Image (cartoon, rainbow, N blue to C red):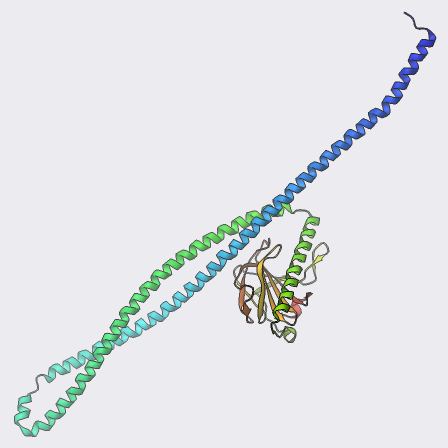
Length: 380
């Protein structure tokens, strides 16, 4: 069948209209699909980011537990070492006493042997002859008096001899006990060293995983800023606690430039230098041997002794007049909040807590909350 011209034109017009309307509808559908795909990608990335953040928080919590455990074991190891040193000192004293007693006993044995020989020889003296012959009576009396004194002296020496022999037995027994105790302490120390090594290996692995999670520079800057704010908050709380305590302390002002270094080592980071991004160092970092002493720079009172994110095991000491000193990244804290400390007292041990890859001490001096340049106050 052939279409009439009018009907053919109408069909052509309808087809053109459908084509014109369908083009924009199809394009809109494509854009909507792309938008949905982008939203799905964004949602997926947000979920991944949240999962990574949750993993990082879990790792941070595990790291805190590991470092607290390292502090506990290191403290126990430090105490065992002190017990070992005390044991060796006691052994040296006992050995010296043992040698003195042995020499005294030998001398007493020689003296008593000589006295016994003299007594034996005196036994052959003809006392009857002296009695019958009056001219020897005075001599006899002198001899009797002499041997009376000799006998009394000999008895005193015998008593001293017996006392020394008894004391020597006691010393020998004490030495045996100390030797046995030393073996036990040495074994305990080895176990503690092994446990410390295991804890440090666990910490190292956890730290490696955590560092992978915190890879970007922006995240690191944000982390450092948050850590700094946490430290400032802890210091401010410590300052308020010091004001409430109203402890009479002289401060540090008269000691500027005269304070001893808080740890023996090399200064690796200086006050005011760039740390990361816009974050700058508010203190100094002293590279030192792990487990070495961290000393109070002046007398004061411990206001804070606990784990703090980014700084690990931290001690804060109030010196009065608004002055405080901060000691971070410690392996172990040997003083507790409220303890009084003197200048040079060991308050902690150098470590790597707070996510450090090498042992060091982070140190600050603050006055009324403001960070001061430690190098102007310390004799470095």
